Image (cartoon, rainbow, N blue to C red; front, top):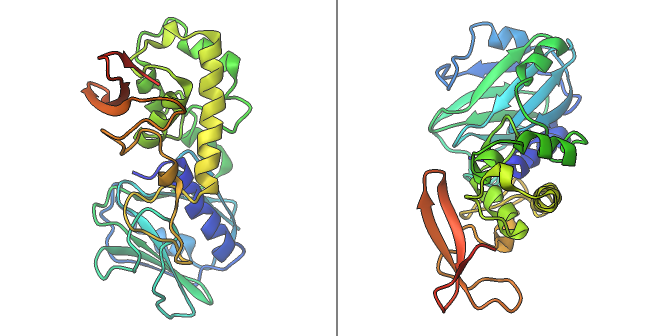
Length: 292
């Protein structure tokens, strides 16, 4: 599933290509996504201008001239493709994490503009589109979500208060949208590794310094991932034919049995399966186990 950096790349690409454009026509070929596309979806969007595209958590928010909104969630396999001037280009994908060329199957939604077309493709159909009629409704839609890492709300007092008396593992909290609304397994592992915090450590046992590290490295890792264009786990490219390259910066994810990249560390990365998913440790030759 795409995480914050990958969704941010899609948002930036959409802003660059369709901001201020008028929606000419909407075609729905399959309404059965995660949530069924309403019958008025096409008429609701047609003839409206897009004023801007923003993002909250893993949701892309299209702002319409009617002061209403269309939310897009990419689910597990959703991708957005751009075709300019009705000519299919080799690279159409607006993000880095899926198919290079517009597939022939699973093209569920098509949005036509004056000089380009946007197509939503989703083989597994876990993604969805949702119409939001007002700013108040949009605010309510995300009221149960935790702050984003770049928000001033994601601060030491918030983290300390949230973890108080909580006996859940810290890895679970990083994946919990109520605490932290943006990341999944890739970036949570990288963040905890850099923090030198055991993912199985109970949240209430985290020190003040460890909470500071979580805030600092969350911002650092996610900003760096955006700068590098997200993580390309397979051979995927964006609309310009460029790979995302943050996977080259991974310290633990996808590095099982490889040498630890920390300076003067002789250990190897070991994967351990637990109730909260895959955990990564550094294993040293003398049978000592230490999480980095």
